[in-house]
Length: 223
Image (cartoon, rainbow, N blue to C red):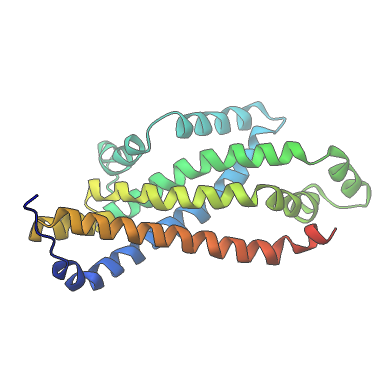
């Protein structure tokens, strides 16, 4: 084995890698927040009595869950140009991950809603709450407790899938590693360092989620 490991280029590029890691977190948080909000709406639409709402939500969910994320990203970055809509790499990644996350979160929320006994909603309406008040104050708080852990897993998945941004020119963590490799030809060192950074980000996200779980779910555990 004649390969000589050189870590100095990696150390020199740490500020750029750190900035790229921040970009990764940015697009991941934006996609997760937007995808969760849209996914909640899709879940209610899927359970709606209105056929149009059910079919529209079903089409979104089926498309998001049964096509590759890379295809969805390419559609946002390249495909929308056919309609005169040109998105930059940053917004293409955010939109694609939001679209995909919404589809998966919709099914997660739908499963959580099915786990809540219908009497909860009926009792809330009997107490005089309007439909939206019953959903907001009674159903959604229980739903978030049920789906909290799957949401955490989804967020980790979004962080890792954001690496596809390098394929459309986004200088997120993987894109920056690729760029640094092209300058230094130190493939092993940069990709190993990048893998470690992804691992640390994922562990940090899991640690924060556990802390939040203790705060938000403590009342449920006490019960």
